[in-house]
Image 1 (spheres, rainbow, N blue to C red):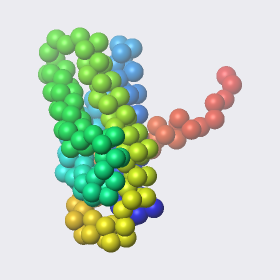
Image 2: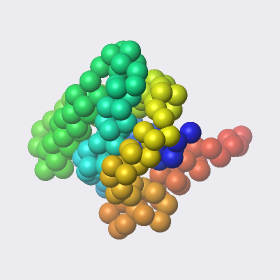
Image 3: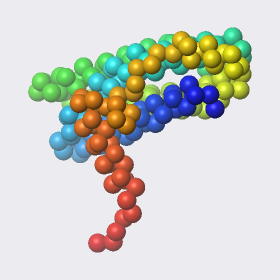
Image 4: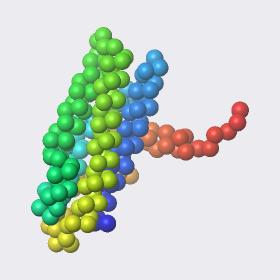
Length: 191
């Protein structure tokens, strides 16, 4: 597997973990409980800042080269840039709804949950498409020279959730996700 795809897949795993964290908070919200707004806000900061600066441009570079090498797969997938723009718009819409909620404005729980779930579902479907169609096709169709040229063009900002790279803003979120994952994987005991 080319190194660029390995890096993008790791970033997808981080995004999936964030989507699960957001989903857990939305579940709490829908039950009428108080979600962890710090976790939700940090998750939205991540989706508003990282993918469009680094992740998506790198995918689009790979996809452009794939379109040259295998136009049929590119035709099946459609315009990746437009899909990324839609993801960014959904993230901005939910972030706006979150700000309204945090300012104690009247917004129905159903509307907020619907915006959040729309973002979560769209992100998951998009990641699944890239993982199942784009990355395998690129790994098969692109040459070693293509990958070398692409590597030279790739943006290199570290994923804020990478171990040791989270920084203050995302460190709590990263630790919270790791704790939840550990709890989620712990064996259930009979009471």
